[in-house]
Image 1 (cartoon, rainbow, N blue to C red):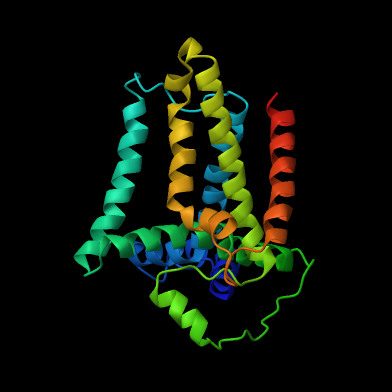
Image 2 (image 1 turned 120 degrees about the horizontal axis):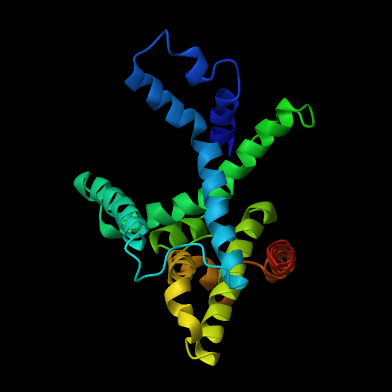
Length: 252
């Protein structure tokens, strides 16, 4: 969060690379600095959008993407597959494994809706004079149990509720949208080509759930000290219902 806050503060200051750098550096260097500075803002906005907007539309039977049979659907498919293959190629060619790529991809999604979001929000509130920047020391002590979980590849969810609640809320909203779409498709027996119209959004929800199955595991399956507390799941459930109700009211 601290790194995200620092980068975002540069992006919306007088030292923004786009306005401060054109006369002082090459365009390639300018683009590199701009990517770093705007990374928290762009990632948190785009990931929050992909986590909720298609799902709310799916929950209300509103298609966003072309039908699978439509040739324009291939554009979205190519973009999605190429993004995954590019990141996988970068990891493998630098000595990493598929497991490393999978964890990096998952952590990127989690970080975008937590650390990047809170870091960007902190900077915006500070610029508006609603909050002063704070840099409190954090506990860096790691106990033996945390080391053991890390070596086993198990997520340790012992962190603040403010970081867990967004993750769990996203998962619950995606579960609700995906399950409802499946039920509607089965009950209506694919009437009016529902599956073909909603496939893109259903696949996106399914992909988010599969990629972040560790969060579902922490909520439902695990019962150790490092799992997601029940109070966080219940609180996130309230947030999820609120989001679905507000989204349905807006889209109806």
